[in-house]
Structures are given as structure tokens and as C-alpha cells.
Image (cartoon, rainbow, N blue to C red; front, side, top):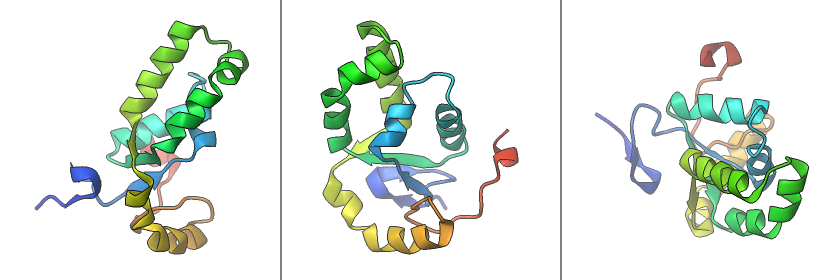
Length: 128
């Protein structure tokens, strides 16, 4: 039986969700970055990436800096942002806050990765 949970997401990896902060999202604008490669592989393996909707405001606010840093023109920026919105579901902050206590517990156990639900350790070699 498939688990149905946060945001109506269903599937094999439905119990594993990762909150992505704005600094990670900024790194996704670099097409050859390890961060982007890892995000794609995690999504392919069934992990759900989410971020508060206010992160989109931050992207908009720092659009010119992002374009300058990653040498993007307006069209390339738009294409990257569309790609990012395919990888990450942007949700209302109150939806994330419901899971904050669990995420903080998991963060203390995982040393840098706040997951809503415990998951087996992910090895990079498993993602290839």
C-alpha cells in the first residue's frame, strides 16, 4: 500500500522529505554543481524536496546577483528557475512548521540534513 502524505505526494519514497533552504536553491543555478547533481539523483530515487514559498521571494530579490554570479542571462535564469521548480515543491511555511519538531530531532541525528521522517542512510554510491 502506498503511503500518502505531505502535499498529496505518493510513491515509494513518500515518507522521505527534505527541506531545502535558500542557499541550496541558489547553488542549483549552477548547472554543473554537485548540489544540482545530488538534488536530481535524490528526486529520481523518490525523495521529495520541499522549500518554503518565501524562498521564491528570496530568489526574486537576489535575481541580479544570481545572474551575475553564475553568468546567466535573463532567459537562462528563467530556464534554471523552471528546472528548480520541477525539482522542489514550494509550500506554505505553516505546512513545514507542523513537522519542525521531528525535523529538529532528525537534524541532531543526521548532522546536517533535516528530514521529516527517519530514513536509511543514503550513500552517494547508491545514487549512481
